[in-house]
Image (cartoon, rainbow, N blue to C red; front, side, top):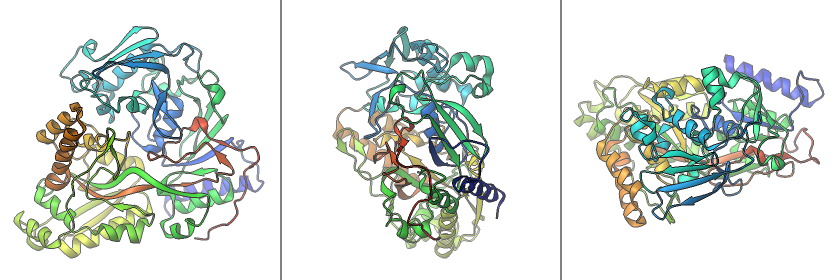
Amino acid sequence: MGRRTRRLAGLACALVLCATGCRPSFQRADLVILNGAEPESLDPHLVTGQADGRIVMALFEGLTRFDPRTAQPMPGLAERWDISDDGCVYTFHLRTNAAWSTGEPIVAEDVVWSWRRILSPETASDYVGVLFYLKNGEAFATGKLKDFDQVGVRALDARTLRVELESPAAFFLDLCCFQPFAVVPRQRIERHGDRWLHARPFMASGAYTLDSWRLNDRVRLRKNPRYWDAANTQSAVIDLLSGVVPATALNLYLSGAVDIVWDKELVPPDLIDKLKERPDFHIAPSLGNYFIRVNVTRTPFDDPRVRRALTLVIDRDRIVSRITKGGERVAYCVSPPGIANGTNVYEPPRGLRPDPDLARQLLAEAGYPHGRGFPTVTYTYNTQESHRKIGVELREMWGRELGLRVELRQLEWKAWLRAQSMLDYDLVRSSWVGDYNDPNTFLDLFMSENPNNRTGWRNPAYDRILRQANAETDPARRQELLCAAETILVEQELPVLPLFFYVNMEFFDPARVTGIHENIRSEHPLRVIRRTASAPAGKRPHEVSP
């Protein structure tokens, strides 16, 4: 048993003892959630993981926020907005009762400063690319423009913000819900620098403040009484526990120590068939994908023929039927089925279907007939048994069909993220959950200047076509351009190898927990979730034996 597994097993024992009568050193929160991996950060301009984002969006709000039922944008710190006829200028009107958790008013200049911070090269945010829709946002972020006054955001007065975009973006209000657009406290950050999250009292702009953060244990959130919508914040205290071991997650849930488990990677794959029979286990389509990043800066992965050969021998049906087992759909492109293109459904390219004979031909043309002379390949994944099993299957496929030698490398969550950012890998398992319902949320990841690219791949033609698509207002023409860009990505260049599209998997009992609604983004704002008064914590019926 590894060190992290032992820590989580110890945590599980402590919580189970709590549920069975042993008095802990802390009082149980109103709502307890097993949230997934230990947060990398709670700075909204630095986080990249879905688990981190759930916490951050409870602490810090933007101009808009997600509707808990539909995941569509609804008023947040801005109570209303006006949009110009050409779709390029937004005028936001902030609420008169928008305030920090410490009592000071939140004003338009706070928004300007927050957006300048994430755009500043010194911040080095992986998510800075989502602000490139602002006029001159990309030029400022990449250092080509030094004068921030030329970026398309400015305060007209304390309660009015004018935002100008490079071109119309139908999903801009969705972006404003997202954590990179959140408002952060200038006074704290300028005074405390990187340690601003440790300063007390905590300054939050969202529904909750940070009560405590115990590493490898939990983040405790406490209701923000000065939040503009505090009257509708449902739970006074929420604990979000860290954990990555599926068996431990299930035991914690069955014991009643946690109320919700909503990370799909915390579901034991071997038990999915039995779990599907439970009314408190929920599976739904997801706006997310699972793929392999290829480090194109390393030889021989800098050759597109090699990358195409790798994808042409992957049996995706085998992976989803033998390992994931949740009804995931195999993927040959990066845009999930049914994703919107404005008011229409986007039709992605077909992608490269399995063809081992063509794969061997391409590998031979690249100079590696039957794999001879090909260096040992390292496949990197983060700590989860399902990722290891997928790695084992890939190793067998690449070895059998192409004669390649593959070594598996397992990393903890933060080390896995760092390896991708530093291009310290050959092939690495990756995933992405869409930030808004449009193909662009997947396609712009791989633009040359997007820090979330993490492959080393740069393609000016891809960048140019995608920029044209984002400026296009005609849905039919936009469809053509998006499809052309994705064709470069998944049929010609292959810096990423798509495997399958996720489904959402969650444990919660609707009779005990309210406020969770199925939506394609699996967006569940903490502010609306609560455990019902008639449902105390306790052991759940119909236990599942591993």
